[in-house]
Image 1: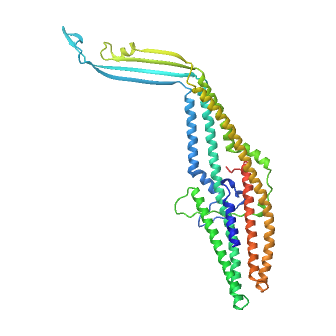
Image 2: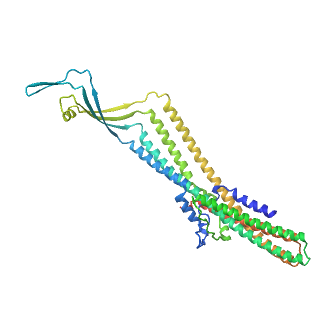
Image 3: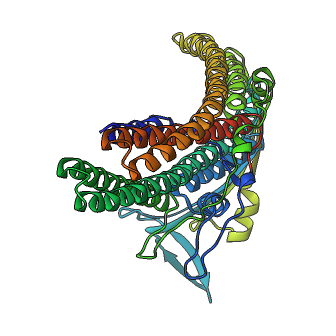
Length: 463
C-alpha cells in the first residue's frame, strides 16, 4: 500500500506543474538519441520543429501577423491623395415634344421631332488630406507597433507550444524511468515469491507469509502496467499536439542522462531575471502597448485640431440633341475645378474629450500591465530557481539514501534466503528501497527541468 501511495504521489507531483514547468530545449543538450530501424522515433528537436511548422494555433498567429502587415499598408495609403473617375449615361424621353429640328435637303424642308435623347457625363475627382492634426501619420506608427506585437505574439505562441511539447516529452522520459524502477521491483518480487514457494515446500514458511509475497508481486505487476498506461497516454497527447493523424504508431527516442547533469551549478536568480527582462516577448509586447497608448492619445487629441484638404475635379458632358458632334461637346463642355478646404471643429458633443480621457486610462492600464508582467516574470523565475535549488539538495540526499537502502535490502535478502529474517522485515526493506528510488527519480528530473527552464528564461530558446 505504501508503494501504491508513493506511485500516486509521484504522478500527482508532476501533473500539478503548470504548462510552463518545462523548458523549450529540455534535455536536448543531454541526449544522444537511439533510433529504431523499424519505426521512426521522434527526438525533442523533431517534435518541436514539426509543431512549429504544422501547429494550427501557431499558423493562426502567423495569419494575424500577415493581417497586421496589411493594416500598415492601408494606413500608409491614407497619406496619399485619392483619385476617382465616374461616368453616367442616360436616355430621356419627352412624349409631348412638338417642335424639332428643320433641315433642307435638295430644296426641300424636312422637319424632325426627337422625343428620345441621350445624355453622357464624365468626371475625374481628386482629394488629398494635407493635415488632420497628425492623425494619419500616427495611425501608421500605431499599426507598425501592432505589427511588432503580432510578431511577438507569434513568438509567444511558439514558446507556449515548445514548452508544452517539452513537458509532455519529459513526462514520457520520467515514466520510462519509472517503468524501469517498477520492473526491477517486480523482478525482485518474483524472485522472492519463487524463493518463498521453495521455503513453503520444506515447511520453513507459512502459507500466510507466502500470500504476502504473492500480493507484493501482483502489486508490482499492477504498478508496471499503470506506468506503461500513463506513458502511452502522454505519447498520445504529444502526437495530438503535433497535429499527427492516422494509424501510424508514434514513439519517442529515449535518451540517456547522467546524475552529474542534475548537480550542475544553478545560475544566479538576479542574472536570469535581468536577461529575461531584455528578451521575453511578453515583456516587449507590454512595452509596445505603452507606446501604442501614447499614440492613441495623440490621435484622440487630433480631434480638437483643424483639417486641411485639397480638392480638384475635371468634368464634361454630351447630349444627343446638341448641334455639335460628340467630340466638340466633350471639348466645349470641359470644366476644371480646384479648391482648398479647412474644417475647424467647434463643438462635437464632448466626443473628442471622451476619446482623450479613454486614451489616458488606456495608457495607465498599459503601464500597470507592464508592471504586472514584470512582477509575474520575477515570481515565475524565482519559483523555478527555488525548485531547482531545493530539488538539487533533495537529489543529493536521495542518492545517498538509495545507496544505503540498497545495501540494507541486499542484506535483508540474504538473511531471508538463509531463513534469518521474516517476510515482514523483507517487505519493509523493499518498500524503503523503492521509496528512496522514487524520491531520487523525482528530485533528479525536477532538478533538470527547473535548470533547463531557468536557461530558457535567460534567453536559451533553441529557435
